[in-house]
Image (cartoon, rainbow, N blue to C red; front, side, top):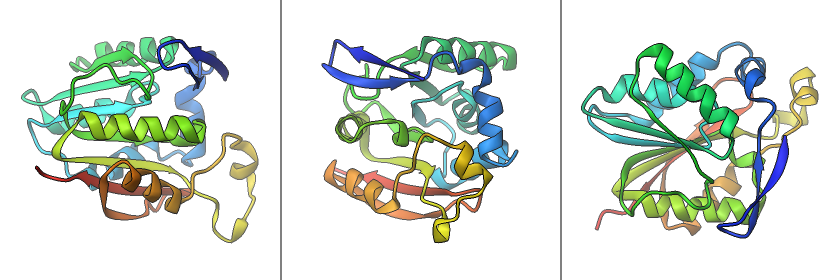
Amino acid sequence: MTITNNSTTGTKSIVLRSHARYYDFVARLLTLGRRGTVHDRIVERASLISGERILDVGCGTGSLALAAKACVGVSGSVCGVDASTEMIERARHKARRGKLKVDFQIATVEALPFPDRSFDVVFSTLMLHHLPRLVRRRCASEVARVLRPGGRILVADFQIPARQRRGWMARFHRHGFVALEDVHELLTDAGLQILESGELGLSDLHFTLAAKEKS
């Protein structure tokens, strides 16, 4: 992991660079080999509909974005953004290999390169714990901006293990955690309404589903 300076926003963003080749392998370890199941549950919680416009912020190697594309079909669109060139290159390779039309772009989560009200659903998975608090708030503000009225965001991330247990995964996983109440505060401060939250039932993952008020 390296930290790069974002000249557009003047903030520092954490970027996973050299780990792109091993990202999927590490993610499988952190989710106890059930990463596909994690994506299935995230997509299910978001209640994706054919034809919707989807954005995956901090998309990594694109696995969730590709799973979302299978749900929204040819009439829907999916875009994934990540600050790491290496991650995006790997995501594009996976899209070509799977013959799926997904738009992967290099961008920072605190300066999304999209017009207001561009998307029906935004995903943020296993990403917030990498960001400093200030960047998290800017990310949430940007997500609220690009969501259409009535649009939804689903955040999934690691929480502090129950009863403070510190097993092999907690020792292996060094990137930190995000408390569920912190996610709620982040989203509500950005003007979003919490709809549902809880445990995903896999590893120490929690989720929050929120929506932008209809206008």
